[in-house]
Image 1 (cartoon, rainbow over the protein chains, first blue to last red):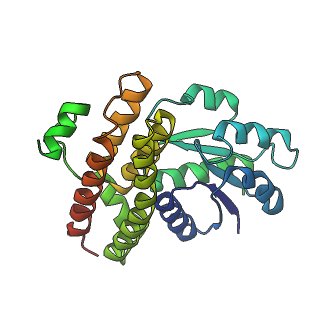
Image 2 (cartoon, chains in turn orange, purple):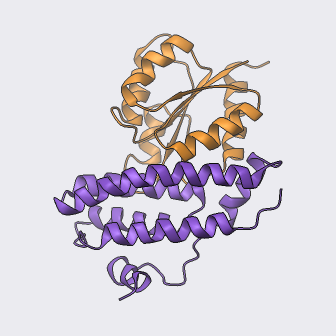
Length: 125
Length: 133
């Protein structure tokens, strides 16, 4: 069973993603604080990470860079989720290494579909 | 002035803007087809609990005229509300955020109460929404 790391401090997002991911057959790890994401990821080596752009302690952009600096995490696909306000643009996030950017509100169903696509690309069955 | 008109005056929020986003509400049925009402109660509780803490931070930001904190809280509530389907609340907080970014925000005194009003109104509508299991 593949592990998906969800790094977000919004309990609504966590609840929705956790339910949808578990129903889709994934194991879910939750991290609510930016500074704990990389240590947790190094421990569990998730197949993919869903990261909120504005996480307390470390931004999504900083986390993308931190993943790339760790050999064990450098190839882990990252999906960034963000609100609609001004912040790092989709282009900046994709250029930094995010594989996909979802803007709230988004469909958890479409997120799961995208997760499956990315996992298929990185580890075809 | 009632809160709806005040939100229109301060943030140009359309007085007719729907409280709820039916597209997002439909996602809850996809997530928990066998107990959508149960899921919605859980979501509402999680949202309300988080909002209570965020509204306190928003009031602190208003009292100290802290734009950075005001923006951070508004951004959080906007995103969370959007994913919860609380359309009007999401738009209000997004408008707060945009005004701050444009250097035009002045409604420190009114904003926490306006947001609190929309939280309550939105959650009432959310929990009253008839979603069939």
